[in-house]
Image (tube, rainbow, N blue to C red):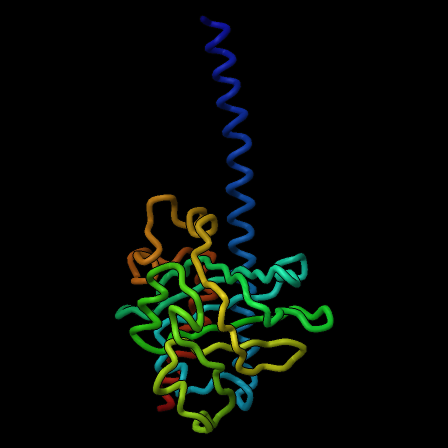
Length: 233
């Protein structure tokens, strides 16, 4: 019995030793993804003449950023990307959840150049789809390629119908993109590693948990341009 107890203790220590590094690695990946998403927002908004118009930012309900990763984050054929999302709450922008975008034949790459994606929920319908944790763009949720630059008056479809506006940035070009057919869903591993197994996706997006330290830069980047947009109206 003593020998069995000793083996059990050793087994427990080995298991803990294996789990802890895994959690640390997950946290590290989460932090890298959040930092990359913040950089995308800052770089896109750093060129106002070609950025997301203030009129759109001021009405945004949620913002999703899928930054590119050179080490296989986007795969040709089996389209796949991972990113983060935050939603507007009465107290400000929520702590982020981790998401993934899959499917479609539009292609994330052109000549080997990976692409950054930004999706913006523009109304209550878009917000509800975000809170549902999984939906098909263009099917479950109406989407439109978003306008860019200071003048967003060229088209009005996005004002009337689009629950989501979609953008891409590749090779220095930032423009609206058609993402119809892709599926946006929760990255359960990322959200679980950040908040634990028992925190619902919609609880985070509704502002029910505080923003983790490693997510403050991303949330601050979104909030900075949201506040700036509202002040400029």
